[in-house]
Image 1 (cartoon, helix red, strand yellow):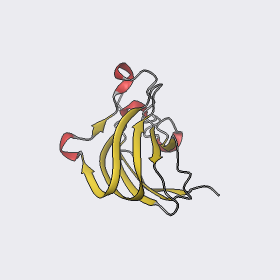
Image 2: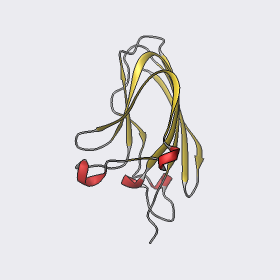
Image 3: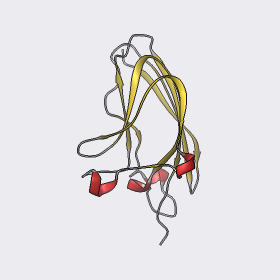
Image 4: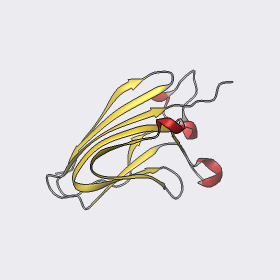
Length: 138
């Protein structure tokens, strides 16, 4: 049996993207699970995919029986946040947490990956990610 993971798109407009993730672990956990594919046409705005312009504005989480590690996808993934317990991280005052970009992280795609650490059978999480697509206007 594998972890039971669901991804629900709450909002996908020209600017905002809100995703809800849930997982109930069987003890095997997740590794490099792609939460948001910033290169996907499903999230395009004005014909442009968000890519490295995707910004995280807010993370609301409830994590029990494990630790969740969020990373920006790149050749060597870059840490975004480590979550355990419950709470929220709010980056709205600084207009969102930016992807380190191509210069700081070679191979950066803008996508967000999720890995669980120490997942126990029955451990679970619910995570809401609020993002800004930040697609440059031409």
